[in-house]
Image (cartoon, rainbow, N blue to C red; front, side, top):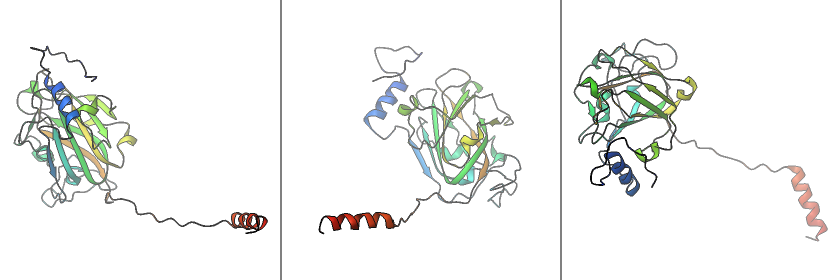
Length: 250
């Protein structure tokens, strides 16, 4: 297997946590420490500034000023390589609660975290806010964002190019936003994946306290298209066939 080399030393020939996780991915479709939460009826939102246009209003009576929210449109949230009992939905919450630490995600075994979101209807992501928890050395230092990769895993990360990648500042006050680009790549998308490959301390533990998503949403539900087709005969084709059959004595 072509496994990426790690900067960490090996001891006694044992696989590093990343290599072990990739090997487990290959043996089974179930990734260890994979926590999934379905949110078919999400009623809360978070505020990331006032917006205008399609979907630029809050659906939450408790947070009426939460505009351009995408959290409330998340149908499914999943985290890979987080400590046991982690819940990806806990880092998706109202902007006014962004500094709360309860429910923070902490990586398990090494520094990498992968968060995957599926939305109830198409959304357009415009900018992000990422806040780490606890020791600043554990705060995410980089993020890679993928569009439409619902089956993304640590195994497939190696061969999948992100739609957007950037360094992240320390954001303890919760004031720094990151604009995603190009905008067209994040327009009318139904799933997003966020890969945090490193932290500011270059250690084995990465913590994520808050993941804020700002943008627009549509009211169109994700559903299969039911199309009906009708075969229409062309007169020329019918005429040629009749002449041919007549020549054959049919």
